[in-house]
Length: 240
Ligand code: HPA
Image (cartoon, rainbow, N blue to C red; front, side, top):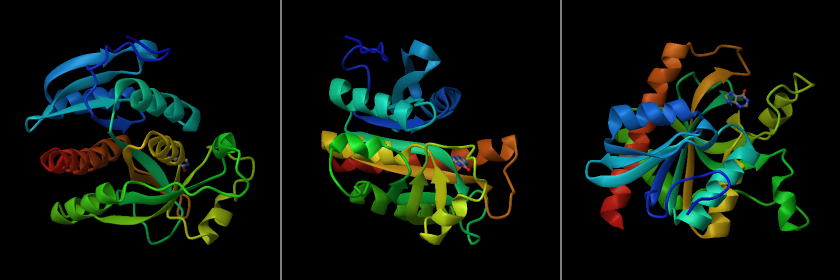
């Protein structure tokens, strides 16, 4: 069995998957943190792997950047491969001055400037939210690991290089914590499929101060996210 974008056989992908945007990050996580690793996808170089973490079977795969790409991969994973728990680990730009570089933001809700929700054919705006048990447990784990985190609304944007460089200030006024490009599509696809999702972001840059993490710091903070996500999987595995 395969889909237009995935070559894995049914059963090759674990019920729980970590989803970084960058496929090379997926490889890094598989190489460093998982055992008995098997490559399950390389179509379009969107590398995916399945292995074990503390005896629990888990997959990790890149999703690319933006909601169209996240929408395709999350949809195929849920609809055709029976994936039940999807955890995005990504970076985001801070919209509020109280967020520091390397802070973790658990996306308690996602707003969007995207047309993605138009497919539902509903007037008004549809809220995108994570699975509450994943959110709650991720916050406990971040506290246990002493990783600074906040939970709040993220903005999932279709535009990285906006023609109005001050556009983000309007989102800032809504109280959103940070801006990224994928959570909204992941949350809606998970709701459509009746499965669980959580998006966790590490602050890689600040639209308020203009600071950004170096490549080495990004790598290190990504490890923080992976640690929370894998602990979460360990917990999930013992509660299913
Ligand atoms: N905008 C959108 N996505 C991002 C950003 C940003 O400033 N930083 C990291 N991901």
